[in-house]
Amino acid sequence: MGRRREATAGQGAVGARGGSVRRYAAFLRGVMPRNCKMPELKRCLEAAGFTEVTTVLSSGNVVFGAREAPPSVLEKKAEAAMEKGLGRAFLTIIRPLEALEAILAADPYAAFRLSPGAKRIVTFLRHPPTTKPSLPIETDGARILGMKGNEIFSAYVPSPRGAVFMTLIEKTFGDELTTRTWDTIKKIADRY
Image (cartoon, rainbow, N blue to C red):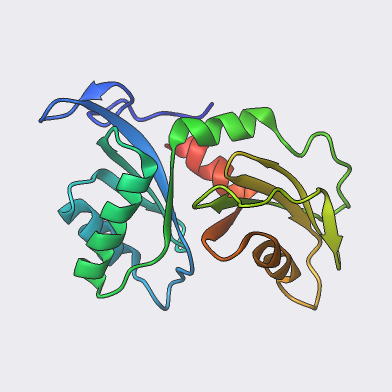
C-alpha cells in the first residue's frame, strides 16, 4: 500500500553505523500551527539524528527514518530533541509505517454500520490500557468501536457540541494518547 521511499531510509537499508534503518510516523499531541512551526520541528528532529524528516499537514505528524529501535526509545529521543530545539516537548507516539499500512489494510470499520457523514478516527495510545472496556461505547454521536493493541478505532458525527469524541476517549483511556483522522493515516501511509 502506498509509495514507499526507497532512499537510504527505506526499510532494511543499513545505516552509517550499522543496523537497519526503518521509516516511522510520529504523532505529536496538541500541535497546531500557532504553537509549533513545522520547519522548526523538522530542524530539531534532524539535529537529533533522524533522517529524511517530513512533516505532514500542520498538526504534528512527522515521517522520518531512524535506526531500528523500540518506539518508546524513539519517542523519548524525539521529545528530548523538541525540548532542546523548541523549548518544549509534545507527547509523541511513534509507529512504524508498516503498522499504519496494516491498520489500513485490516479496515477495522468494515464490520460497523456508520452514520452518513461520520468521521473515522484512530487514537494511538502510548501504553496499553490498564483495563479493557466493553466496546462499543457511545455518547452524543461519538462511538468507540474497537481496539487492537494500542490503537482505538472510533467514529463520530460532527455536531455543534464540538469534540465530544475526545471527551469520551480521554474519559475511557486517559490522556497519554493522540488522535488522527482515518484520512490523515491514509495520507501518511500512501505518501511515504
